[in-house]
Length: 471
Ligand code: BGC
Image 1 (spheres, rainbow, N blue to C red):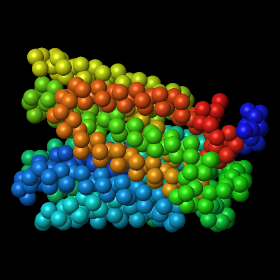
Image 2: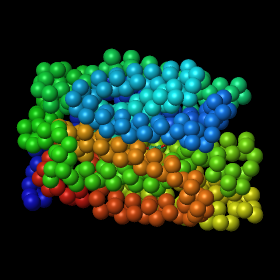
Image 3: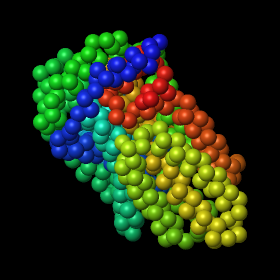
Image 4: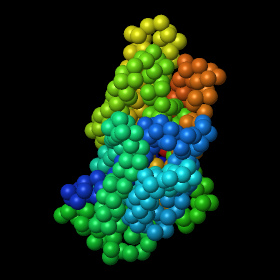
């Protein structure tokens, strides 16, 4: 193990590589983030559409659950293959293929005349959602170190905007029972993502990894404006020259990768088992169960939850470069623990009082707000920045797959848990998971604020322990 001095020297040698960005990087990041918009829209839209789909195809419970959950299955598969494809074909081409898949999925769903076709359409959409986890990797590889946190978090912001738009589109088409429109409209951002990826460049890091030094220099010049790009170019090259990974699955267990793998997969699981999607997918259900019986009250409160999610993600993006990843993560998870505790309590007492029902709704919002400043954006950001370049796609894809698999388990068990344990104990169970998430994050999650991707990679190779990073 190297001394802290060696680590300090390493950092000094790489000082000045934080880089600046041209306006072009913002455009690139925003276009890539459309992948997140589609993720949020396509996972959120089904809550409204499913009512009319069930009616049109006269579906019983199992086929209904299939239409909803098959997306998560597709996403798990898409995330796993997406990482590999992104290392093999490049980030840009992978995202272009993703856009085609989203467009195809939206069209198949909108035109489906039978249940199997609809399920196939939803599976295709799921694959697109899974593949979209390449977005944060794309953004973090083009952003300068001092803006990478908020720029890569654009993905999460787009997810939350996608969820909110889905709620609104569902509301707008509910009167006409227009489920085909609800599902089909996703083709529009799909087209924009595709056009963006035709116009945008590949990341300089992937190009250099493939030995395309001239192309990498060209892209660096384009995305860094007038700044001197040589230091950044050299850093990437030096890091690659000492990397021992070869892009295989077995590399995930190398000593310089394993700690980061544990962090990514751990956060992936904790992001889901603390219950976020029970709120995102079942908000009207929970709100009605809390005692607000009017449908319009439930819809309003649901839209409120979606809005809080968007606003607090922006707050997180504003803070992330200033306070760092760890403080935000740890504070947000404390907020989740407290709100899950209170939520469980409100369910114990709400049967008799409307006031308490509103307490439940406000607590629900506090819970979403706490998630939105912490586990929401920071999970996707960290899995795009803590892995070595040679296996970044594969490793972050593995974490994303764990995220989707956990999402599937939580979504499929939530209603049964409520039936068996009751809502209070179900939320308390998620609260216990949140306590475990806090302990895990406190001991294992590194501070990556202000460090270049190459410094992070070097850190694992030299010091190996997450807590010493950023100190
Ligand atoms: C999670 C999704 C969730 C969304 C809510 C994302 O970070 O991965 O599962 O629906 O946040 O905003």
